Length: 246
Ligand SMILES: Nc1ncnc2c1ncn2[C@@H]1O[C@H](COP(=O)(O)OP(=O)(O)OP(=O)(O)O)[C@@H](O)[C@H]1O
Image (tube, rainbow, N blue to C red):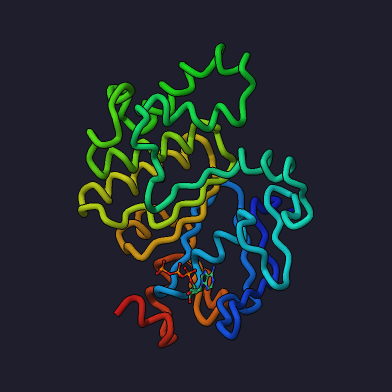
């Protein structure tokens, strides 16, 4: 059987900052429609990996292909086009505090849609994205009026508005109470099912990982140390893997 083309392919990348070797011959693949969690200790290089994937950091060696394109060979315009297909949910949410929810959601459209398209479709797109996260009623509110969980949902709605083919989630439940964290995890699954997006999720939160992951990669010593379902990793006797579960 022919394998589906990968959404993201990372091949043998290495990245060091001075003598600090962070990624050391790391490889991974994100397949269509899957939620892939990257699990690693603090400082293991998860953020560096994500930054390499969105071309904010250039690896010292290796190859990264996103949606069929070698990202190190793209010019600025090609990279901008590709970024429209890659949603990124920042740990900080990165909402603009001085803008309403509606204006925050309009922001990515200004960059990636023509004026004509915005006049015709922006209102519908904003409402659909807000409905996806269950917050249509907050459209005219300011971020400061919203709870932490609501701000996370608005940030997710802003990511969804361009209908990305892949979403990168950076610790999506950090700083949230357990109930809100579970709601966000469930929302990640709902988005996966509705839009068939593939996602990379950086998380330490075992509940989030249990709810969202189809597969987990363990980033240990700069390498893809193990790649398996959460269930199988839990039963793996390797001491380096056990550390995460004991
Ligand atoms: N721009 C940079 N310059 C120098 N060192 C860096 C830079 N970015 C990251 N590092 C180093 O790379 C290592 C990995 O950092 P990274 O932020 O990727 O860890 P992480 O796994 O995301 O950690 P956490 O779970 O705490 O967010 C750290 O030792 C960090 O100091």
